[in-house]
Length: 227
Image (cartoon, rainbow, N blue to C red; front, side, top):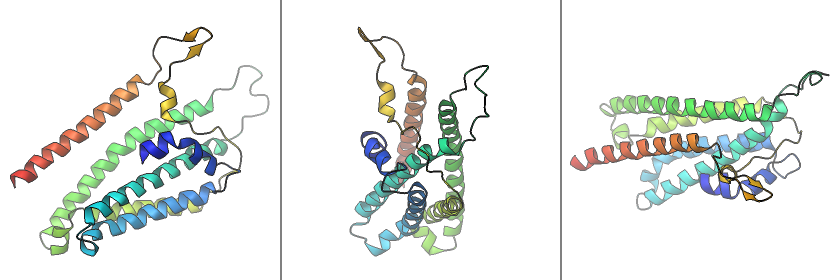
């Protein structure tokens, strides 16, 4: 879902959520939060409702969660520049105004890199609490990730409440750009330039994070296989 709607189909998604597009950005964010909260509430129950197709249904649920996350992110990135205060009159008389879009993008990036580990640690702690509850409640023993799923649903419900009270300007802002565009080498009149594109550090961090996640999953699977 991230690759499809966050890179390959980012242009159509941006057009749908543009100020003159058919989807209102504020309501799109609210629907995405509500949908994610509802899916996380019912996700632990698929094994009870559809035991024969629970795995396939859960994979579809995860895909829909990813699609909703991409729509929410595109709306956020397109609405945030319009919410910045306008520069003071004559502020560019002495020196050019700084590129606030680049600063905003860097803020989003750093916030994401900080929020993801914190969210992961929180979910691990909630899972441990769920395992503690499982010692006394059989339902939590059969649905080990249910408590973490419900906590995540509560966070999305809180996000929906916060977005409801926001007022998003209808000002046209720069479109969201696919991360694949940053991988292209800059071109000049004589052809493509040599050199770095500026994304190598982020690619290294992303690859390290994915490798760590895969290593953790393999380690856990070995323990479960032993049991």
